[in-house]
Length: 324
Image 1: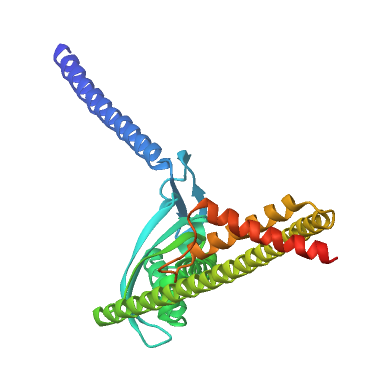
Image 2 (image 1 turned 180 degrees about the vertical axis):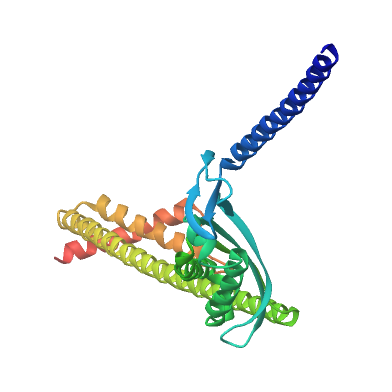
């Protein structure tokens, strides 16, 4: 009996250990499976990103920045889209302008994803699509313009490209914010020809400005000469008026003096005529002495001779008065 009891207890203990080990393994497996499911159902999205969720290959929703819950196993993450503004370099390409000039052009495109599902499922390889669309429109827009317009109207080119490319990428959920042409490089020989043309144009403008300056100078000089002539004529006119007035005043004074002398002679005043004759005599001597062609002058220097001459004239005046 004792032996049977010991055997039975040993068997029951072995069975209990066997079933206890299985239960522990089961619970550990269940716990691991639950942790895996939680990890598969919780998704963290960083700022500036958005994820699409696909259920059996079909789009269902969009995950925004933060923690998001999805159905594990049946749901999976589809596309991961960057929502920040992005920049894309447009490689150099050769373009033939409207006037058949070959130029090399490159640029840069700024764009932003506005609608995640459209950007993920409306077009395949979004970056390549935007790049090729931009390059073809650069050829179209710039190929319809002359070289001079390309070099002088970059703002207009950028605006036209932005309008066309933004409209074309609208169905893809993309917003083109800016398109800038970075560099326009004509061939070397064309650059040299443009340099010679610019130099000739500058020389032409310089010649025109110089001619205009000479013309304006001649006009101002002629106007100055005309004004000087007018002023000179005005001066001569004023001088003539003043000379005439002086002569008139001198004649009036002369006439008044002659009248006074005549009146004095008529009254028998011999001193008046002596004064008048002596004054005229002295003025005549003064004029003779100041003449430029006079080399030798004979005139009485003794005062008695002058007085004698004046006395002779006075005697003549007395005879005249006696005859009257």
